[in-house]
Length: 109
Image 1 (tube, rainbow, N blue to C red):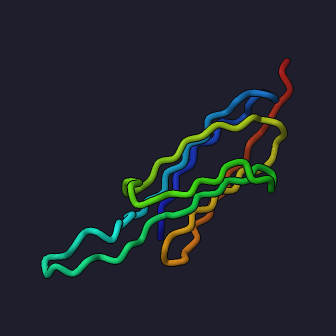
Image 2: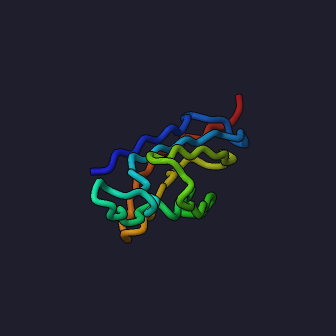
């Protein structure tokens, strides 16, 4: 089971720029490392990250082998409406890891 950690502040004021943080536990094997017998470990990295906000894509990142294990990604969105952020990571084995987090947006007083 892959561990995913998300940091989504809530509640936030409408129109605020909000920092979103994600961490996924994944080995990110580059395909260049070998075992004690000299056999290369197969490449297996997270190659695509996507985030949707109320089903609208707000972030899409294509990742390469230079990304460290357990990639920590941070980005900013504008808080428009309450709803859901959905996160999706794709790796070279065709596996897809998903998680979501609610976001509550309130009007400024």
